[in-house]
Length: 94
Image 1 (cartoon, rainbow, N blue to C red):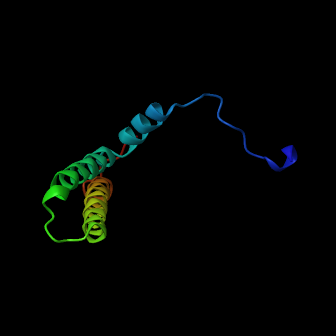
Image 2: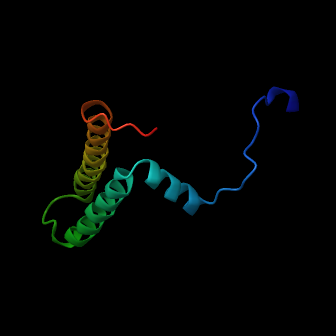
Protein backbone atom coordinates (compact mmCIF):
# COMPACT_ATOMS: atom_id res chain seq x y z
CA UNK A 1 0.00 0.00 0.00
CA UNK A 2 2.85 2.40 0.77
CA UNK A 3 4.26 2.08 -2.76
CA UNK A 4 1.08 3.58 -4.22
CA UNK A 5 1.68 6.95 -2.55
CA UNK A 6 3.96 8.88 -4.89
CA UNK A 7 3.40 12.42 -3.51
CA UNK A 8 4.96 13.74 -0.35
CA UNK A 9 2.89 14.99 2.52
CA UNK A 10 3.53 18.57 3.66
CA UNK A 11 6.09 18.85 6.41
CA UNK A 12 4.00 21.29 8.47
CA UNK A 13 0.73 20.91 10.30
CA UNK A 14 -1.86 23.48 9.21
CA UNK A 15 -4.75 24.06 11.60
CA UNK A 16 -8.24 24.86 10.37
CA UNK A 17 -7.89 28.52 11.35
CA UNK A 18 -4.54 28.76 9.52
CA UNK A 19 -6.09 27.21 6.43
CA UNK A 20 -9.06 29.64 6.58
CA UNK A 21 -6.69 32.61 6.97
CA UNK A 22 -4.59 31.44 4.01
CA UNK A 23 -7.65 30.97 1.82
CA UNK A 24 -8.93 34.44 2.84
CA UNK A 25 -5.61 35.99 1.76
CA UNK A 26 -5.72 34.15 -1.56
CA UNK A 27 -9.37 35.05 -2.23
CA UNK A 28 -10.46 38.20 -0.37
CA UNK A 29 -14.11 37.87 -1.41
CA UNK A 30 -14.49 34.48 0.30
CA UNK A 31 -14.88 36.03 3.79
CA UNK A 32 -17.43 38.46 2.33
CA UNK A 33 -19.39 35.49 0.98
CA UNK A 34 -19.18 33.72 4.33
CA UNK A 35 -20.33 36.88 6.13
CA UNK A 36 -23.26 37.14 3.71
CA UNK A 37 -24.13 33.51 4.40
CA UNK A 38 -24.11 34.10 8.15
CA UNK A 39 -26.22 37.26 7.71
CA UNK A 40 -28.83 35.45 5.59
CA UNK A 41 -29.00 32.63 8.14
CA UNK A 42 -29.36 35.07 11.03
CA UNK A 43 -32.12 37.00 9.25
CA UNK A 44 -33.81 33.72 8.36
CA UNK A 45 -33.70 32.54 11.95
CA UNK A 46 -35.26 35.84 13.05
CA UNK A 47 -37.97 35.74 10.37
CA UNK A 48 -38.80 32.10 11.07
CA UNK A 49 -41.20 33.24 13.79
CA UNK A 50 -43.12 35.52 11.41
CA UNK A 51 -43.37 33.25 8.39
CA UNK A 52 -47.19 33.22 8.51
CA UNK A 53 -48.92 30.22 7.01
CA UNK A 54 -45.84 29.12 5.03
CA UNK A 55 -44.70 25.59 5.78
CA UNK A 56 -41.30 25.08 7.36
CA UNK A 57 -39.92 23.15 4.40
CA UNK A 58 -40.83 25.90 1.90
CA UNK A 59 -39.35 28.55 4.20
CA UNK A 60 -36.10 26.60 4.56
CA UNK A 61 -35.89 26.04 0.78
CA UNK A 62 -36.23 29.79 0.18
CA UNK A 63 -33.65 30.49 2.87
CA UNK A 64 -31.22 28.03 1.28
CA UNK A 65 -31.64 29.67 -2.13
CA UNK A 66 -31.02 33.12 -0.61
CA UNK A 67 -27.90 31.92 1.20
CA UNK A 68 -26.50 30.21 -1.89
CA UNK A 69 -27.27 33.25 -4.02
CA UNK A 70 -25.40 35.50 -1.61
CA UNK A 71 -22.28 33.33 -1.66
CA UNK A 72 -22.35 32.87 -5.45
CA UNK A 73 -22.78 36.62 -5.96
CA UNK A 74 -19.82 37.42 -3.69
CA UNK A 75 -17.59 34.85 -5.41
CA UNK A 76 -18.67 36.10 -8.87
CA UNK A 77 -17.84 39.69 -7.93
CA UNK A 78 -14.48 38.50 -6.62
CA UNK A 79 -13.79 36.61 -9.83
CA UNK A 80 -14.71 39.66 -11.92
CA UNK A 81 -12.47 41.86 -9.78
CA UNK A 82 -9.56 39.45 -10.13
CA UNK A 83 -10.01 39.13 -13.88
CA UNK A 84 -10.28 42.91 -14.30
CA UNK A 85 -7.04 43.43 -12.36
CA UNK A 86 -5.22 40.74 -14.29
CA UNK A 87 -6.43 41.32 -17.85
CA UNK A 88 -7.83 44.86 -18.11
CA UNK A 89 -5.65 46.89 -15.77
CA UNK A 90 -2.55 44.70 -16.36
CA UNK A 91 -1.48 44.66 -12.72
CA UNK A 92 1.14 41.93 -12.63
CA UNK A 93 2.91 40.77 -9.49
CA UNK A 94 6.51 40.18 -10.54
